[in-house]
Length: 408
Image (cartoon, rainbow, N blue to C red; front, side, top):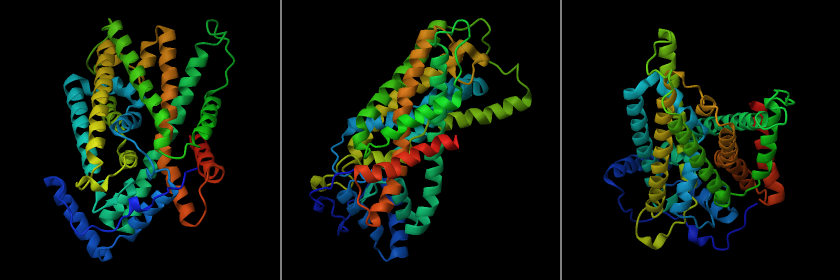
């Protein structure tokens, strides 16, 4: 599954005798984390030494060993992780928040999440040690055991939950395309296979894509997924703008009860929070960028990673604000839960957009599943099980990708 690295010394993680300061804000964070960790473990964090060496030796899925990624890879990986099918639900969130609050909350969420990403990126490498996984930084801050059991359950809930959502989303998109392209579409006599059948078909596709060994090898799929997400967002913006404000479009909650309005507001906040995801895989993405120990800086991967994030977030702003505002402007309080279904016509354009959603979800599924595969493979190689395509590929990818549809 992964190729063995020929030179492990490049990943030597012996503690540095001199630490260069990070940014003023992050310096305070690092000193607090380091002092807590030093007092808890006597200044040694052996688990990170072991993790970094295993990453270099076995090219684990989340370790980024032997990769030559750049800010370009960081940009489209982040787009794939963040701009998902949830963007199409943002107009429905605007229904309950309406113009002033909706614009403000979406803008605040954009700023807050990019700030959170910046903090994680700057803390990726400390004292010569690379934190290639989200839970590793948690272990450094809280201790090997407490950090692991504090972070891992939350991270697994997010990643597995999103993959279940992606299974259902892809199944619905496949079902929609079939229902609107089959021979009996106009007479409503298409043979129905049911939503579950399409979810199973998507799972079979993921079984094969799960054989991709690591994040960097996933680049082509992730790039295609990023292009698709921008493309179907553009279709949603274009069709909404072309449709213009509909005659029955109203920008108020007059047709809702007080309870519906209150619960709708909370649901809208959840929809926006769901749309701004991707933080739980940002360190795994940054790990694909090679670290140059001769660069003379504390965290040499931070600059290219952050540049990629800025590019990604510019496109995130285009997709999120464009779809959310154009869709709500067109349909007002009549906006459905998914803007594509509110548009309805022309059918062929909506079907093209749904196909793009399917392709995008194929990549997004793997981006969020890769850390899960990495956790499983790490435990196996640590116990002396050799990692190769025939063994660990099917031991981790196939059963795990088959589990999501079962849960869905």
